[in-house]
Image: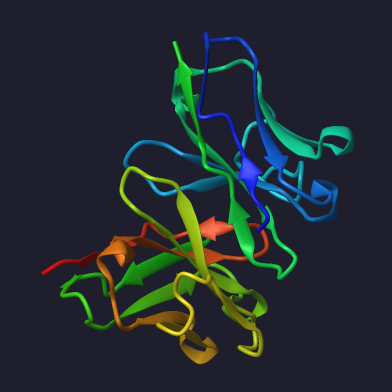
Length: 111
Length: 114
């Protein structure tokens, strides 16, 4: 089974930059698109990155996505951290059957 | 603006059945694959099922295969999920999720309890 592994939690100060990783268990993560979702407490998820690095309209350029083939991983980078960025972040990609696979989620704390 | 509104979540006994519905607006519903994703409160996201724009391609997570049935009615901009043989571990918030640039509904809560 294809798995995506994320750190359980990360924390950083306002104004700083944080990167959240998402590592594939097998294969080549670059072969399928990766999406990133933000979920604030008590709310439904929203999409912050789709197709590896694309931002939906309304998502600020402080949010960026990338793929690192050498480590079989994707990353979400948030620069100029704001308190409103405090949330859970999930990566998502696809297995060989084109079924969605989610990472376990990363709790971002902005202290 | 993409809007997805789910309904049908209730409290049901183990072994019971129910049907979830989702109405989409603000986009061409019949252009997109649609999905159901669930989340146990306080836990992570779990993909449940997908259906292609024309209903010809359908897939399920192993955890629900043989018990849940996804369907859609493009004339009504509607997506459905029929849940049968429900188990306590099916208790979750069920989200209707649009493919493409992924859009999420607000979810409907299914509670399986005796």
